[in-house]
Image (cartoon, rainbow, N blue to C red; front, side, top):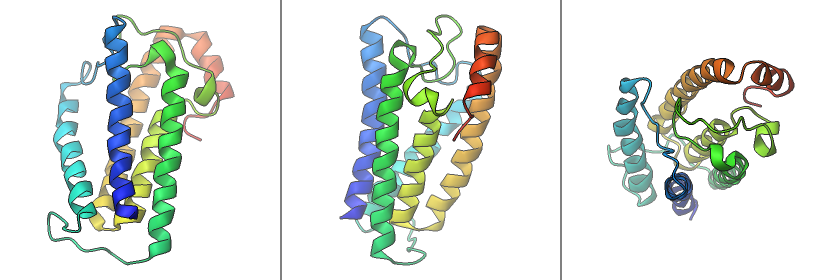
Length: 188
């Protein structure tokens, strides 16, 4: 059961993000700005698709690459489901807190307002924190070295993107962003 719930978490994560982008598009805002600054970001897509493949094949009981669990513990699997649920809750709250400022990537043309309330009053990057919590949950459920490797790679990619976004936000919002950074931590 935890494996099915963990794969459902990935479906819900994708659903929340894609539905939010679709809603923004219907309102006349092009929210998908992924890889607008660095074309090499398109390389992330095949790795993300491979991750989804691993989640769904592991949930069905056949690790796509013949991988086995590092260890088995039902309690740890349920803890992973709890992490996935908490991450989804944080993601939902973050998307709601962003309102019309939601973008995937950096939007230089029409960036929206600086989000500082809701989830953004606790973390400057609650969406990345939510993704990390979900990835940790997925590892706790599926427990193989590929999922562990993905946590490390994702942490590096998230941090790289956060640094890019911070550089842009400093230029775009100036003192307002500097004051926000003094009040709220980067991650937690």
